[in-house]
Amino acid sequence: MKILITTPLYPPDIGGPAQYAFNLEQEFQKLGHKVRVIKFSDVKHWPSGIRHFLYFFKLLPAMFWADWCLILDTFSVGLPAVVAGRLLGKKTIIRTGGDFLWENYVERTGKLVLLRNFYQTEIPVFSFKERLIFKLTHWILNRSNLIVFSTDWQRQIWHKPYRLDLSKTTIIENYYGGKEISSEPTQKVFVSGSRFLKWKNKIRLFKAFARAKAKIPSLVLDDSNVIYNQFIKKIKENYAVILVSLGDISPNMILDAIRYNKPFILAQETGLYDRLKNVGVFVDPEDIEEIKEKILWLVDSNNYQIAKKKIENFTFVHDWPGIAKEFLALAKSQ
Image (cartoon, rainbow, N blue to C red; front, side):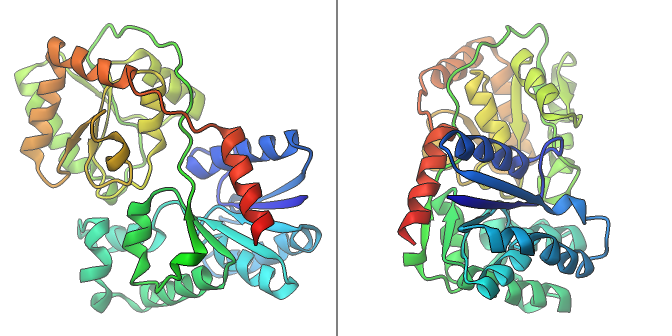
């Protein structure tokens, strides 16, 4: 088949869609398919609206060429790709990532609303731009051939507000790699590299960590952002990973920690909770004191070994060849 992948990011860009686009491109090609990747980052320096327009014309020839299109974002590439797909009669499959509307709402208002509560409480106070994005997202989702979620948690959050036809949705879980060799940590460094966005809940994390550090001064929080290979090296060499966002669908940082058998602290507001509830340490992202207590709990050597053993015993694998075949099966069924 001839497959078009539209993605907001592509290596050397950092982020989940970049890794997803790159790895599926490789796997599709290994299976003998032809692949073209069109990335939104090429036009991102233009103002909103104009960049969507430019991206539409950038991907149009590739859409004409393709048998079907895999869309790795709901809005930035989703809008122009679905319009192009419908114009040319091509199959479009959207793989959702995060929640563009919620993320931007939290940034604009500073209101630290949990993702699972967002559509229940905030729709009446949307700005004009947010109402427009909400309506366009509804149109995009309901005009694609199929919507692929990585977790049922996000599907249930979106089901009612976007009036989704559940028969046109499915689940393909995120990448869970096989176990890799890691290093024994020499310091109690917690890795938490992510963008400084309000929904990432960094202020509460910093406050909780400062309280924990007041009791154990040797603790270190590494919040630096680096390219993917360097970030993996940090996970491999350090003590643990911590992520307390207000809503993370299936965070790659945690799945990378599992590959290297590194204990993690994760907010319970995540689509990974059902699969990992007996594997990791979970916290209420709104409770600074609980986050502090869980950090101190994991610093204890006996508790650390207990947490590490649970991760070592977690052997679920969902690799890129399998994910690629799942997408190909869906494309053939549409």
